[in-house]
Length: 289
Length: 329
Image 1: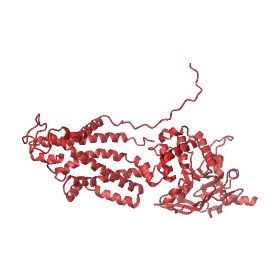
Image 2: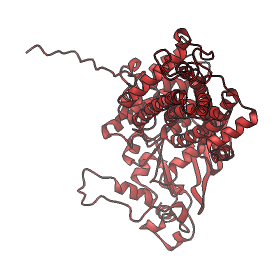
Image 3: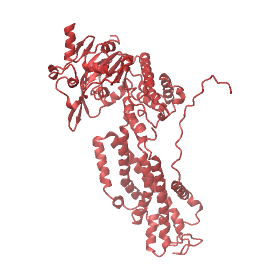
């Protein structure tokens, strides 16, 4: 036996650790990999693609081959290149739409939930009215009113999408507002702005975060839908929805519509996987207590 | 005038009424209380007697309740004061801590950060570094070991007793003169309770802090306070210094409370209790609100609600017991 130490053992004070990426498993890994690949493609495509997405590079309506992996379309453009190029429209558009909608929804939802009263009533009735329309119909109406084009389609989608986040966040803010630590901060003189920003919002954003990830795929889809009916990106721009429209007129050349279709499928599925995993991970409520 | 003679907090005829779908509910029905600098006042009463509501009302923290009467802090009327001015009073003049330390801290911020935010919301020109230094100093004051390291801990890494210490540190961070502690030890172990009460007493002596201790634990009252106000059904039914009130209570309710205290030198077959159930503000009897449960009840008790009258060295709102003493003396 060694001598008994007479000095007091130094007790280790636990220090803060970062939340580990425990949600990242199974389909979520596939999702993250696919999203990463798409983002890389969108960023670097001009550096390595052998074909110009807007120029005829071969014979018209050729089937898939070694030189043109997904064939060529009615104007002789390389379909594979155009399908990849579509990410350079859809991903940034979806990102801008989601971020704008989240920002607007967060502000509206936070104000409505925190202050309540007539402000809450006014904001939430606006939300109700907006959500009474099917998103695609409302987006079509707004885009048609503003005039077709990708910029107006984005405005329309933000206008359609923000109420979802406003409602989500409002419900959460109302629940968190009644927590004891909020009252306790109030009792020692914290300002309302401080309470909302540092005490309520960090505990309320989870559903918005999860939903916005899932919605990313939905917005990609909506962009394609609007373009498909001619209200979003216009030909000849390589946008997935617009490409499908072109493919629809060449029904027996299946590859023209299939390539952008698969691209949409991959992106939407990937974001759904990630969103699902995030939701499961955050589902253990009160884990921070 | 010297500080000691002027009450720091004067509550006069404070009334709080909640409006509910089934009609107005008078939770507090006219309270008079003076709090002097540096003293410790206990407000005792069972759940629903209006003790917490009184304190929340004077800090302007009751939304949607009608508050009338007067509550002055050093002459400043708090009832009806505008929200911005009230916010500056909360924390830096009159501060409050709550019952359950487990849920009273923000789970997503380190305790050092929370302390800094609270300080900087009253002193906007305080630098981050200075706020952090003061946070460490405060943690040290409330006897948290290794304060510099604890500063970066999240609330879930601390025990209940430590969290209550952190709450106290936050409450005194902006040098208040009155600290309202709403059952600060109810959620804690008995040994930790004693430590927290000791800490509160030390801080009171050190900072000349007036302490309003809201509690239903008469054991805590005896050891830690100078004066007691007993509340029942939204009114103060007895008030006085601790010793006379414990030795010769002038209200049957106070007597009942004291009889309920378990004693080590008496064999208890059954834990003593006050018979009946507390009255609710919705169903107050005519006359004395305690009359349905009172063993001294007389016909006159059912007609007029008694007011505070001298009984020995205390003031009690009981027409029977105060009359008895007046006759006997």
